[in-house]
Amino acid sequence: AVGLWGAMSAVPEYALPQRQHARRRRNRAAKKETPAEESGLAATSSGSRKRTHEEASNGDEELSSQRHLQRTESSDRSPAPVAGGHAEPEKYLQELQEHRSVAIKGHKFEYLDHTADVQCHAWGDNLEEAFANAGLSMYNYMTPIKGIAVDESLSRTFEAEGHDMESLLFNFLDELLFIFHTEFFVACQLEVLKVDKTNWTIEARGKGSRFSRDTHECGTEVKAITYSAMQIYERENEAEIFVIVDI
Image 1 (cartoon, one colour):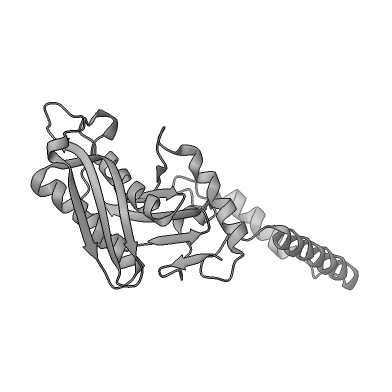
Image 2 (cartoon, helix red, strand yellow; image 1 turned 60 degrees about the vertical axis):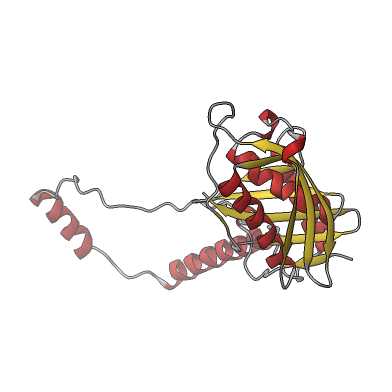
């Protein structure tokens, strides 16, 4: 059984087919027709005649066959997967696997293109691991966590609560971000100890150190967490999270 958490009315950006729109613009620098050309156009117009019944029939048949061919080609195309329970979950999750090809080496998360912000895609064997990897993906975007050493004296716990799965994820990541902005703590190891789906609470433990511009590489600051296109998928032995953060 597949659990689909979140508002799934809109198709996520990564699932939309790439379309190219071409516009035909007038050539403003084009020369105006000369009087001779204008007279030629007038002669052609005056010399026009009505199509015969046979020519009209042949043209209509050709146009009809072209339209039939276009409908056939469009019907053969596979539609983009639509989240929300109408598409087949198995097929949809299989197509999501393609995005893992750009995963950060040694981690179960990656970054997907977005028009203005960044979309974090994290996964794991269960919901707890997926939540933890979502948090690590946010830290890693601000500074590569491979350069963060563990200071045991700074290890700490995180707690958050919500009213559903999406608000729980939002508040959890927001708590991690708040601690970073106030204490400059960056976790390079993050473990979610418990996700309570009844009371909507989460407990996690993080190990890392305090961020310093002098010793750590600077990435891109995450300003806030968003609900935009937030998606949480859970099934047996697998869970995935998509969340967009404001940068």
